[in-house]
Image 1 (cartoon, rainbow, N blue to C red):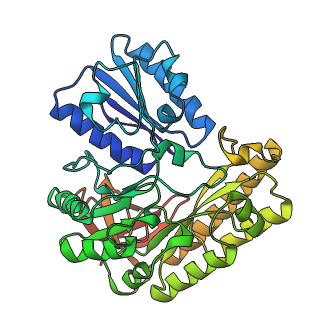
Image 2: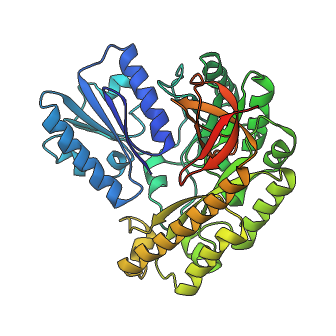
Length: 416
């Protein structure tokens, strides 16, 4: 889960990349319609802690902006509208299905305007021209999820899987490129399930690269290891503009834990995905999401996940201590003591830091193409953070030589 960020003076984002993108859409809609008398809080519901932070943020915003109209939307608002409607600081609560329409979002409708997100319907998202102060652009390709992992509430906040038509996606990518974005990230709730008129995620990515030749980099957000199609491997092998960095929604690497999570892959399945990707592109690197201390997880089960960091040669870890989410099946399972959960999360993070440092060391003495994002900082093709010793224009892709590392990044000078 990302930190809260202010995308504009009126939109506060909490949570995932998709929320970040939707906040850009909300902000653009407010600007186009001349709406400037409201503060929108776009909430996250992935954990109970996310909801607590949302309430804390709302209270602070009210203290700092006593005259503003505060409107709460996003996943937490969709799942628990009454929680926010009961807060004296909140003027209005709007659901995920309504939030991208500025007339509904800031209108004079009921205090709570949250429809049934599970109702089927066409997915319509507004086009935007780009991202303020960003060089990497996110483009939404689908919404929702049809799976029911036992730890996850998000399908009930986002609804069923619906894919955006490919022509509209390509137009959005082209607009981003024309407005100066060198890299595009395809995002959504479950992008591995993209399916529009027979197009898979991999075939969509191939179509984008073919029809938008000016796009310098295409990257994918989180992938389900159970649903990676053949075209993704072909792109890794054949398309230099398809970035050699995949992030997998692994969650665990013990088969019993995965079964109790209702994940659709096994440890062997995940290993096969990684081996096949490395066969296609030997330099590909992997990030993963991991949950520490899932209910019923024993020491042996945890050690299977811990050992996967080395066995699978993982590079980037997002580690989440398990937190019971009301409304999910896992919340009813026998829990792991909190101190054990915290210890396991710390051990995973330590192992992840060691793995990242090991990868960073292999980069010293090589050259990297760095997308300059802010000041002298950016990311390589393999998504390694890079700090430069020289100035380069934001938004450009600059070649640099990796000279050393620190605990967070590659340190690079000008390429010779």
